Length: 327
Ligand code: BTN
Image (cartoon, rainbow, N blue to C red; front, side):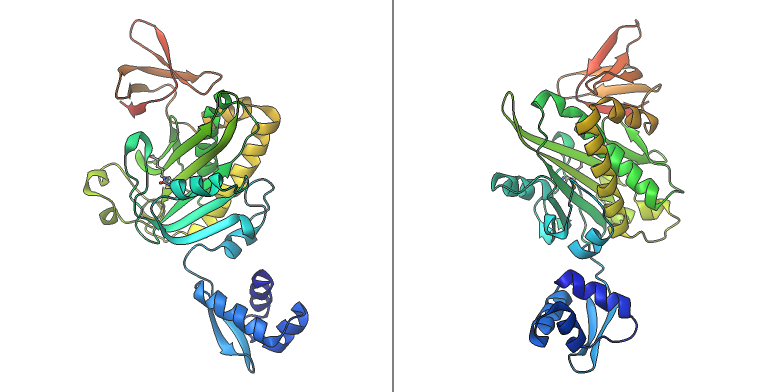
């Protein structure tokens, strides 16, 4: 019902719409309409007026909210309606909370977004700095009907979706993907992906794809250790503020299309799309993990999405995980 109220008020804007006509249209009492208006105001909608004189939608919320996000989507698997979208003011980590929701049976396509994270998680045990209202901190729940060894392309898919979503809203920017799933703008990181999986040998219980983007984040809102290497969409957009809702919607839209293509056609299209947006292949790289460090030229992805690096003696090594530095 809230969705319809928002739609009616927006259509009538800037003129007021009476509680009476909304009540008639919805087949409910004026008191019910008034209660729903109160609930929307709590969510951050600025709605002025009274039941008698009518209501005016002055402003939609600054924060990302399910109705505004859902109105921009036409997705099938990911957030097919607003009930799949959960927007919270503050969480420890959207990945962690979505895992708990998955354990309790939340369906595939559930999306969790927070205005801030107290303990945002990055890859390799790092933190993800998540200042309030500045970035997109978003996790998507998937339950792909695939054996667990088929899932690593999903982490590449998430990076392609984020890259395409940013390009859709800000075509003047040219993000590139550093293997496996960092997005860089002019050599600085603006987005990272953390995928987490719960599976048995033959069965995936669920996969959480967590995407973090610095959107309207200024450098001094990031930890000092990142100020040389990170950036945000606003900083790369000549300082102009960027709509977080538009970017989040575009990412979910692309994610939905790519995921359906992956389920129907397998890994090849994901690898092709990753390849056409990447800034890793052909470059001299160092790849590291706690257990190894190797230098060479990044040549290609193999069929599983692993990075093939050619060492100085021409030996080709396949890396399924690791941290790449472009030299
Ligand atoms: C990286 O290290 O590059 C990955 C960063 C992933 C951050 C996102 S923000 C939303 C989701 N929730 C988390 O705790 N982490 C991911």
